[in-house]
Length: 349
Picture 1: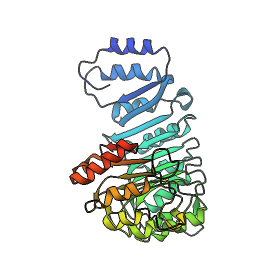
Picture 2 (picture 1 turned 135 degrees about the horizontal axis):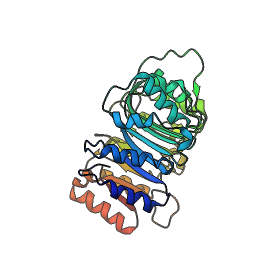
Picture 3 (picture 1 turned 90 degrees about the vertical axis):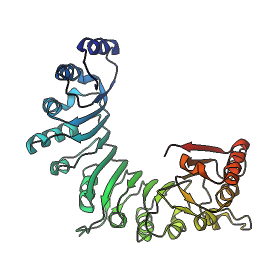
Picture 4 (picture 1 turned 90 degrees about the horizontal axis):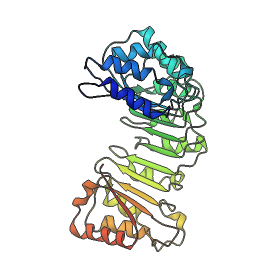
């Protein structure tokens, strides 16, 4: 809905041609005189909304306050981008209540600050939640408590803080994927039990054994691990026995993959017992940045690749395009492996 010289007739024609099909709507802020008319038109088709991106701005919030949860039968995904004005507490509470009651809403991205009223309701149908709001440990626990069916959570800006935990750890029974960044996650890990957890993305905790305690307490099996080693003992974390089930391992952030780490990950053919290797079931490795000597990185990858016809071993390597400044010998070796059948993906991040 961004752009100048809004033509209401074009929007009417577009909506007519959709013939009631689910709609993906992006409410970009627009100061054109015709924006309010288009807004009214789009809101008259709310029964078709399926995927909506919006900002909290006056004209949109005025419309949101008139919605009824049952009038949005197709809405599955909502992304709140930013807030352009101060919303009255009572209005925010009503908007939050409306969203929480939408029976089909399963995916919510809330990038703005979390209001106090957010955890005063139960989000019964939400399966996926992400936020860029700054959250302390207690706030994260309160949010998780209000999501009884949650399966995927991303706390982008977690702040490690003492939590008043007087009872046993909070159990989030259906959470399969947990992403937490910005601050040391050990405090939150120690406050949770996650029996369904399979995917974990986080910084390396200062107390790396907090991940071990989380896994043992939860009796879960981690299959997918993404780590950022901005601080903490990465090697000690990777050596944890409870992480040997990992089949995809991704490194994010700068200066993560060093000679020491790469050599520890190199498959040792002299060991007859595969369980003595780090990550014996590893089939995917992702690398965003590395500081390794010539030959160390490609040798680690070659050691774990057993050929394209072998069902075991490394199958896919994801490399940031920034790594393509490797020395010529390393780049040549990787391209040779790709020609032999190893799936090497160069990403933009």
